Image (tube, rainbow, N blue to C red; front, side, top):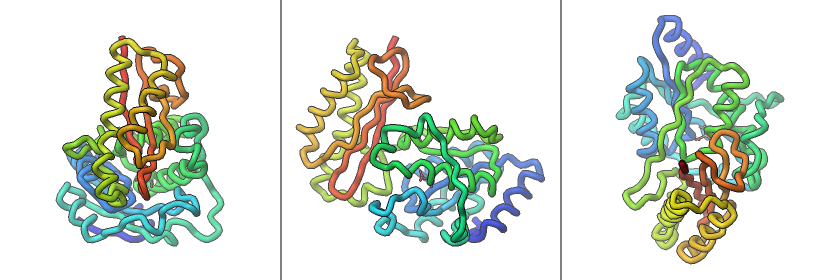
Length: 283
Ligand code: PAF
């Protein structure tokens, strides 16, 4: 696997592969790769001739009060995971190479980037969409793979690609979980043993909510209140950031579940802010 540090060299290689008629796939990451990322890269490997992985801890999607400095890093392990999963190229630029000091262009998406995570992280999604646009312009991949754990991020990226006619197929990979149900996340490393022991209730509560909806409870206010009570009892150390039931494409909160919806949650657990979601389909 080649490691490339400069945007110019990355773009040259990726565009060369496209010129040769190869199908290319990009897996954008912020590093500290785990088995969730491994699955994204493996999916790309099965569906493309050339696989690029970017490892870039993007400063523009963190607010000044957030965990950019504390965010875990392990570049050696990133290289190992990417190689094992079958990447051909790893792009790991310095922030200064990605953003000139006078950079003044943002890519902002309205609609799905409102509410949920944006309520407490109002500048987060414009950082994501700006860096993902830059990565797309550099790599111009046929396919890009993202995890469904960041459900809102995926909806925002899909909307951006659609609205800007970006010729890139977006694949949302199902969430990869620990055996006890906790969604894999680089931020799980922040959890104390006590918090870690409680964290699987995030998923258990969502499954209960899904079952209640399928069994006939379609009133989202009641479903959300029940989930909040479940979390208060089972994750007493946690603080709910949000519990929402939204349309899976627009991310607009729903009063009543009709056909498809997604329940999404964010809960602060000590230093970690855990997110998870579940799709709901009712007849
Ligand atoms: O999901 C992530 O890891 C990041 O938000 C992404 C998509 C790599 C952009 O920095």
